[in-house]
Length: 245
Ligand code: NDP
Image (cartoon, rainbow, N blue to C red; front, side, top):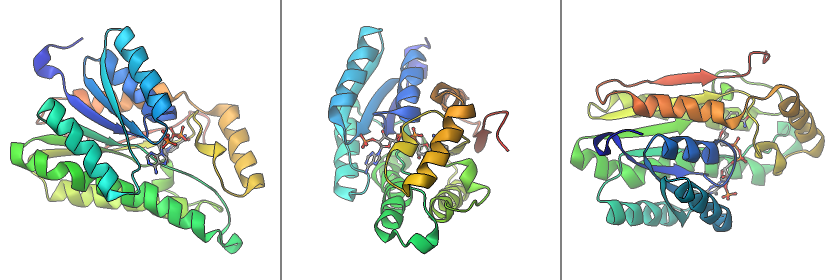
């Protein structure tokens, strides 16, 4: 575990399952204080308790990333409690897959609201604090779907391409804040359990069960980027199963 000087205050969105949960465990094990956010507070409470029992530091707060007020309240509470925000991991995301012809417009909007607006709201909530200190780190979880488009994933890919684009823009406008994109391929999580066209989701779930990597593999990449010295900005890490095409 690092010295207190290396221990960061890290906010994680979507920490109630999958990659966010694994990232919380990994970063707490690295000696950081993790602040867990998601809608399912019962899960966050249990996870924070487990981390503390294991000797780590964690607290949690209810968070809906589709609400700017909610994201601001989450960040302000953390800032008041800890006096600073060193890192924000924008991880919350949804992937209800379907063809565009299915016109599942509510799910398009949900992907835009969670994956894209949610990431921007996270940045809006922490950026003034980071600029004031002249230091900080934004880690955005994109996807291999931020690099290639596949049928049934057009809108999901659009949101993830957008996350990469806005990350690069923020990086170009920053000389004090590090910006990292972590782009996972198939990773074991609950991502395919929510919404989408049932047949398409079943195919995605089968692929996930066949060769997905554990969420801890993505958490390791996030931990690596955060752990570099302040003058070293790891801009993107793509982490996918060896067997993924
Ligand atoms: P999970 O479904 O396991 O986790 C998604 C997390 O997002 C949950 O903690 C969920 O919490 C949270 N979330 C969803 N909606 C909201 C909301 N409105 N407000 C706050 N939190 C929300 O999936 P993953 O762990 O796989 O997903 C994490 C990220 O990784 C996503 O951005 C996803 O796109 C990305 N990714 C995943 C890949 C994979 O193969 N698994 C591949 C590439 C990228 P709650 O429901 O409690 O709010």
